[in-house]
Image (spheres, chains in turn cyan, blue):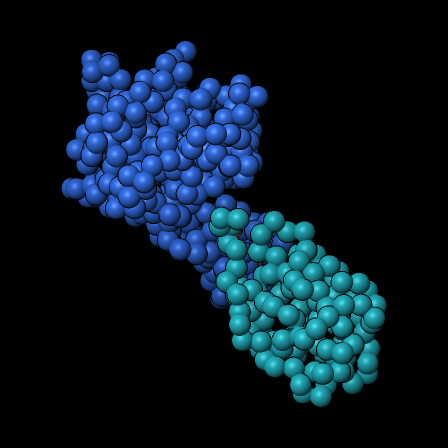
Length: 121
Length: 292
Ligand code: SF4
Ligand code: SF4
């Protein structure tokens, strides 16, 4: 199955990016073939709605699961509409999180934070 | 004369100042543009309320016509659209109602529909016309409400009113602005004659004051400062004003009585002669400062 993870750099030793919508890159990883592709997140520099645009990228890559430390409600709506499951990462290490996911140890992410819809900052 | 009351953050006394100025004036209009947290009406408790809904236009997709070309998604710079499975999703709260996607859609699959984002409440409290803008929670932008609120201000300048105003001297309009210096604040001050900057006597207060002062300078508006919660001793906000040539209009002392009345939603200028004199004095200072 194919999974997606927001990451800080384009290599397997990198860390999971704490932000989903503003993450610089996404790792698209095939758990069977171990094939890794890194793609740019073209939403990272958007003024608003970055979560929605980033989620569109994830959906377009036809993954089955997204591993992320957090996810805003709009992004979650896009991801869930595409029947992609969201799992919550633990710690920074990309590799450890992929391993934990393969062992079924990552919990489903159920705290979805409300977005900052151009409100007061 | 139209006067905007601003501050860099909430809770500095912006509402206190604008409400009391409106109450101290002979006849005035108070417009609450702090649409995310309008508080002025809690003090005025206006009567004869009339509500008007404010709506914006939001795209709605006809799935039979949409072929999934995604031109609309590429166009939307607010990222309010996504295409999942075979359906276009519209994130209404993210949409800024620019209308562009409906224009760009080659299949004419997008139509605009009306969506309520808040309301405007008009009422009267003694000598003051009270107009309040209320943005529904979760909405992207209060700007459409502010635009409508300020249309009211121009209506208030109709010929008939002008004549009346000339006879009675001057009618004041006070605009209680949203805190900060974002575009919503710019929208609120762009047509005013004078800006009052409200600041607290702390270093943090100075930072906030400098933020709004920059904004006011950008618009080239005459302005003056009201220093709130003043104690004896050093006042960094006062120092900042002197160094930057901002006219200090008045200092409101830090007094328990003010705090108590304020938390009970009482209007100082209506409760107590001393405070009424204070705000009358401020009003005179503003009227002079704003005179061309
Ligand atoms: S531009 Fe029109 S046809 Fe193309 S995806 Fe958007 S709504 Fe559908
Ligand atoms: S109206 Fe403008 S902001 Fe709203 S979805 Fe269409 S393009 Fe985006």
